[in-house]
Every structure is written in C-alpha cells, then in structure tokens.
Image 1: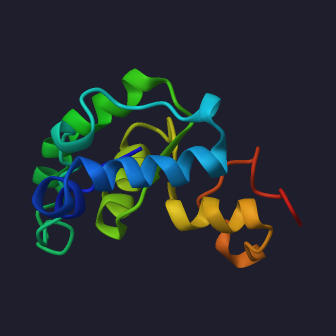
Image 2 (image 1 turned 180 degrees about the horizontal axis):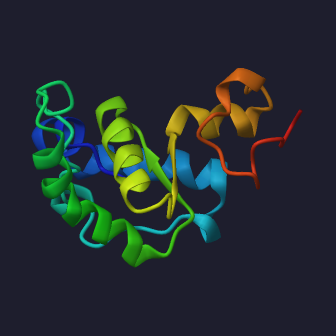
Length: 135
C-alpha cells in the first residue's frame, strides 16, 4: 500500500494511514496486504505529486521514483494499492519501466470489486487473476 504524501505525511498522519489499511484489509484480506518498509508517515514519496507528472521532466521523475520502484519490488507483491491518483499514475508508470513487475490499482477499484459493482470498463489496471472476478 502506498501512503500518499499529502494525506499521510503532510496532513492527517499515521491515523489516516491506519484508516487506509483498515479498508484495504477488509477488501483484500489480512493475509494479502503486504506493507512496504518504511511505511505510514515514513513511507517514501513516489515522485509523482506536486505537479511532477505534468511538469514534463519524465526522465527526472522516473529517476526520483527508482527508490519507490525498489521499495515495491522488495515486497514481492503482485499489486500496489494507490489511494491517490498522482501516486497511481506515477507508480503505474514505474511498473512499466520495471516491465510490469506489479499491477497498480486504486483503492476504490478494490472496494468496488469486493462489493461486486466494478464495471467491465473499470478493470484496466487489474491483472488477469482479478480482471474477470464478478463478471
């Protein structure tokens, strides 16, 4: 799970990070949630926020994001949950640079999948193991 900078480190702190984990555990199961190290208020920035995605310095953004790539790869997880849309876009781009070593999903995608209301057109970021669940 990615802990978004603005919501966790800059605003609501570890209590918010715990709320995100509470929801994630309920939709993916305790045994399937793998935390990055470090995490919560100490998690590494993905490098996509603060206008970095729109600034046009793609190579620099990816170099900065290498720390996040290494952190995600160290978990061995097949998915990275990104509650923030900037984190999602950056982490998905980093996965493409790492030859799609993980799938990047919005937290809301997993919530809708668990509720059985995820539309066919909302499954673009799911891997083959989840793409047809509930259809």
